[in-house]
Image 1: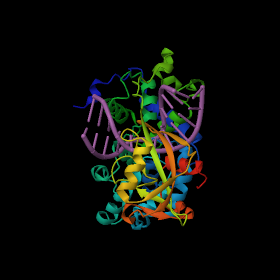
Image 2 (image 1 turned 135 degrees about the vertical axis):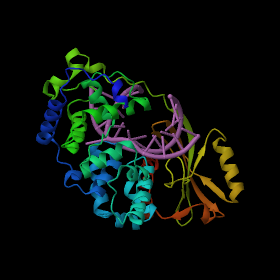
Image 3 (image 1 turned 60 degrees about the vertical axis):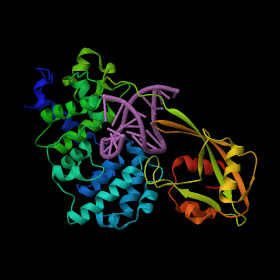
Image 4 (image 1 turned 90 degrees about the horizontal axis):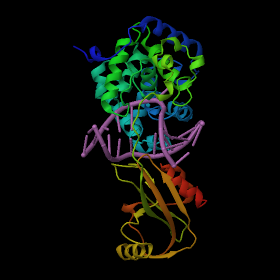
Length: 362
DNA sequence: AAATCGGGGCA
DNA sequence: TGCCCAGATTT
């Protein structure tokens, strides 16, 4: 017995009419987006990964460049991770790139290079969760599987006046049951994309355009005049602040020292000018320790500036310390000494690019 | 269930 | 500023 037994779908809700109105509107008004050119499952897959928590306009140039560089699963499978991260540079959530890369290699190894059209096999691939699974199955394979994202929860919470907290994991499952029971079996692709397109263009978080909404007559929230109160969502906690020193070292030949971040955690496997927490040492103690640890001498230049960077869950406040290496050397295993031109060839997170821009070395 | 994981758009 | 975005994974 499914959970849908306990979902309150209003008696007057006309499922078929809702499907028809939504799908008709979608096919009339859908945006001309690069991943809508065809149904190539690999293409759909890449687009869905890039679109996770990322707006359409941001994704478009990255998608074009990525598909141009890696037209097939084989092209992506053969690339190395640093190259893939460079293609992802600036897009954020870099585990998406690492997982996609790994999953594509798995498709080449185990599925003869063909993206599986099977629910369980898709879900096994790194980076494919319930939403992406449903999106690929419905859009690339025309299978009636729900694809519930933030748009869909917002739209359906209003249409069916569902007042569960969409910040809670359990609520997503509720909506997946709802959509499974309400969606079109004939055109699941247009239905799912229609819900998301409606969320992006009409049924927006603030000031929903109910006057021109194609499913207005099906919407319980509009009927009650409470569309602005839905969906219900509890607030996220405020970010904690962390203070760092960024040590920008220049050797006598004019090279810069950069290092690769750890392979797990925030900004994994990207590059940086070395960061040191200010919670442990002040600038004087840090430099003292550093010179002793590596047996080098540093000549710190004044007026180095600061960089502030906001992530989802933490805020970095960085004091930049520019220093000339006047004697000794840093072991190559700790990082790379590179010239200014080669800064372009390594994948850096935006916080580091911001720092470079401030120093006029980008 | 809660925390982690980027970056940008918008009122 | 705070909230949201075609979420997944780890703890």
